Image (cartoon, rainbow, N blue to C red; front, side, top):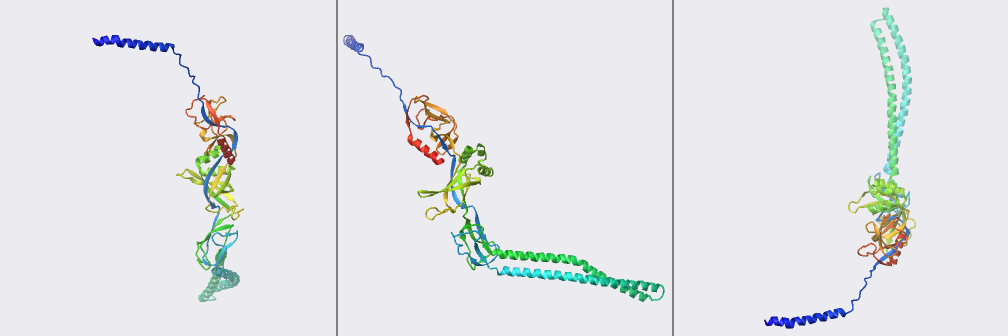
Length: 453
């Protein structure tokens, strides 16, 4: 009972007084101040789109090798009588230089033997001609004798028929006639064999003459000469050494032209061809067709050798494509030729383009004029731009060329447009932007396109 009295007499009156005071304060207090919510601008970096020329190019690396090499292989055997004093590793010899000579004695003897055989065969041929004339004269005489014997036989047969001579006399006359006829047949047989004997002798003379030509050829082969100017790569012969047939005595590399098999990406090569000739890109993986296509595109090429802080460049030409694509790296070899690999070489300043050098090769086509943007600015076939009101908008584009870190656009983007090159975060079309020009990136793009030209 006491608790109920305490609730009604103490607690409830106090609560009522507190509620009244709170209501008074709320009703007599000023309303809260309103805070206006302003739109926040997102800071982005932009570049101003400008048309610039850029040359499509592809870069690869490879080793230098000579376009031609000469192996001095002995075609005949013999001991070495002479070796060119300049035939030493690293030496340069002109075209037509005598590299070495082998001993010629064996081959001069073979020539003398062949000539003697020819003379003997020709003398025998002359002897056969004389014999033929003698046999013909003897045949004429024997035929006259045969005619006489035939007349004697006719008379003997007539006398025998008249009973004047005996059978023995007739038989003797007939035997004499047969013997004479045998002589005539023997001479005629000998004469009939003479043409075939003459042919055999002529063929024998031809064999001897072939032997003479072989001996003379072998004599010329004892001297090894250089067909083109070259640098000595290796030597394996010295005076007095016996050289066998087929032995390699020296290897020399031509200095007039060098080759570089530059390994380039198939995809990069395809992009270069597509930018140069859209139909040519279809043959980018067929080496046989690609060689013909590349030769017809008039691509520019150069080879660069880096020497510390210096770079030395040689103009080159595209010659052919290597036989296959490397299945591990996906690279294909483009073979470039450099004429005058040793032309203009200056000791200490410009070295010759020699075998084994590791060089950079660049292939480029005619420049394409378009708007250059960094590759990072291309997002799923679109670029982000800031409009005149500094609002975000997207522009669909189709790249004309994608090369290294740049993209060339020829359609879809107007010159002077402000292309966003930073990541603005969540992409909301129409969002407010705070634009900052990236002058350093613009200068870098200008320098990149300048180098590409």
